[in-house]
Length: 259
Figure 1 (tube, rainbow, N blue to C red):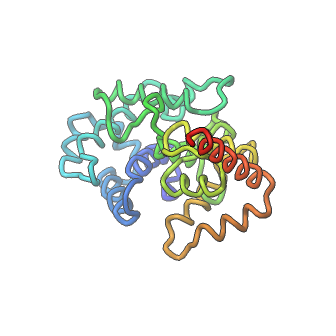
Figure 2 (figure 1 turned 90 degrees about the vertical axis):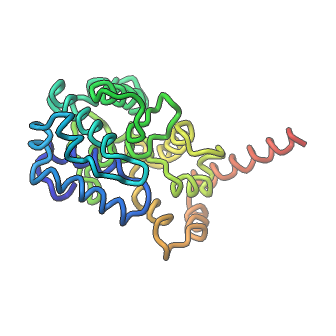
């Protein structure tokens, strides 16, 4: 995304990169580069002149793990139609955003539904929905990239406040959150993502996903040792200490009720 100054290009690049952000990093980068290479210097211009059929032809041989070129083409076509209807992907997303909502989840649900509908397909592995209970890690990652603005996230979207973002919950963040005592849930689903986000919101009310990039690196890097780091953090933070104590007490209550 850093290679694209035009926001119209960047929001398409972000959609592609986040959609394919599963599996090994090397393979992700290779697949994303392959998709963007076929678009030329301006993904927005490429998409503007493309039809669903031409997109399916362009990516006919594409494969990223279990994602096919047909799925990719339909997501891109959904993005194209959303731009035609709303003027931008940003405007498409914010059209369903409500000030009364605590998080972006309701707007994300409507956003996914629109992309699915205008893309002329039903359920797609690249477009999970919060309505199905999914943590929607890749879509929340996309929102983090597009909404936040700092040395990591390039931002550019207006109308969405970082305070409503949800943590992109992958296996690494899930493990770290359990070590921190931020969740005692046994699966990394949508409810767990909201629970973890609520805990981070106690630390950073205006920007609960600010720690996502740094913490997930602990799980990704081979030279990082998570548990000693988490123990050191927990020793110095009252919120983490309280959360850890609450989680331990919850586990103990469950154990006693089952005895």
